[in-house]
Length: 181
Image (cartoon, rainbow, N blue to C red):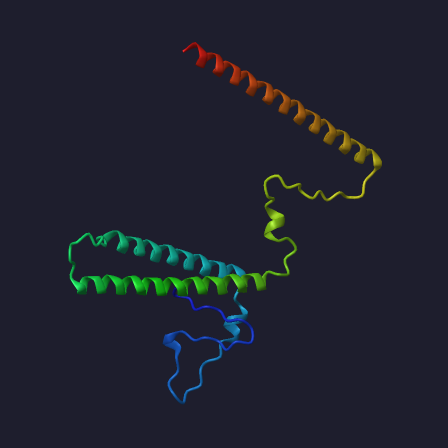
């Protein structure tokens, strides 16, 4: 969390606490620093934020694991309040980290909206047909492509029939072994 969060366009720049100016002094302009922010830098900050989120979450689990259930044993009220305060602070910090992560995500999407291919185009979903970009070519190439696709479909159908036969054979063998016992 060492790096400060970049601001959206039109928002005044946010200075780190150490750079806060005293009354009467003008804050230093940070326009040059904001122009050099790249999506890669934002992703690195996002990665550090996710690591902070995981660390905070693990600390919350450690606090809750160390807490005894109220099974009739009276704990000191001060210990309960201390743990409750720590838990509340961790949860508040976690909410802030998630907000920071959301802002980083929105800023990255905003900065990379002009890219040609989106993530959905790079990684296809299972069972989804890939769009094939076909360059203009001769009719012979199109005919050969259709023949290859037809052969692949035929082989897939043959494999499906073979798998069904194997499955039926295994069911029959298992049924016979069950009856034998």
